[in-house]
Amino acid sequence: MGKDHAAPVEYGTAVDRYLSAAGLGTASRRIYRISLLGWAWPLVDRRTPTGRDRRGAHPPTLPLALLDDPATPERLRRGLTDRSTTAQPSTLIRELACLRAATAWWLAQGWITTDPALDLVQPPAPAPPLSPNRARAALALQAPLRELTLWYFLHESRAVVEHVLALDIDHLDLPARRTRAHTTTHLSWGEGTARLLPLLLAGRTTGPVFVTARRASATTPPGDRCPVTGRGRLSYRRAAELFTSATRPLDPSGHGWTLLVLRDRTAAR
Image (tube, helix red, strand yellow):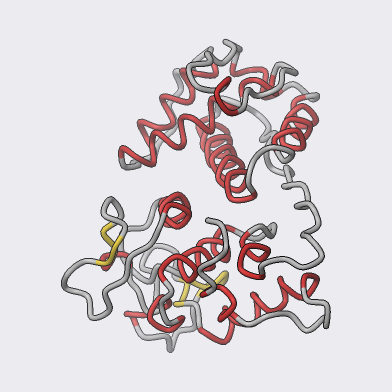
């Protein structure tokens, strides 16, 4: 994608230009727009409205050049810390992912000269209760987008882990929240998975849903390789290792849990 040299002056206009070029679906575009405009408040040292106050609230108008202000990364950090007191971890992950994607694109266009979101890190989640519901505690962890999406998918679908990891993107009917009729395994999922999947799949339309962090080896079968990133299909072993490692601090024994705890249906979604 070539650079657009006609840089917008106002932040909201830059958001609209980014969304027009991002190739997102209608639902994902709406999510990105809400998240990106939500960052306008901390950019001017104001608290982002929450709950009913956020509905219908008009974000402040501000120049896009404010993103190059040396004080902006600290403003964003304060805003993220403040949001962490009222927002779910999955919401923070989504909002942070949206901001990082947009600032990286604006930087590539030459509209800003620095990326204020580059080093932005989600604050640690509050400590879980002494006797937590294990699935609920796991879903509240601070975790990468891929892991959190997989955990929500397993929890909401109650599917066998291997069946979920075997899914390709063209197996998914995202608006209907289920797999397409032609797939061997028929699965459905809930709101948590529906929020995260479009973010995980942004820019990809074919290949495995869940892929590794690194490029696949040359011997990886084409069907297990993402044609866009070159990354291979995530294995059960690696997914299990990551979950056990992430849940070790939650386990009184210190061993960590298995992915089977996510099949507990009593956890809040």
